[in-house]
Length: 54
Image 1 (spheres, rainbow, N blue to C red):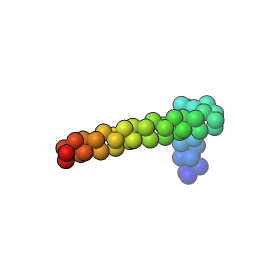
Image 2: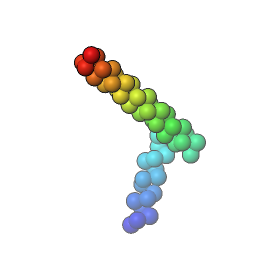
Image 3: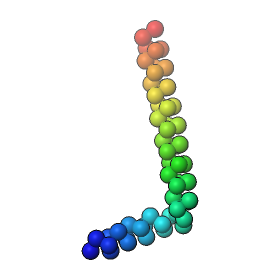
């Protein structure tokens, strides 16, 4: 049972990315996008607080 669930998860994982290199690249792209978006949100919030407290 466990091996069949593992196999299904692997199939789902590899459906979008054909190789391990593809999986690593997709993960890296997702991390960069998340990091960039979070940084922008942090900076905009910081600026808004600064403007509000002037």
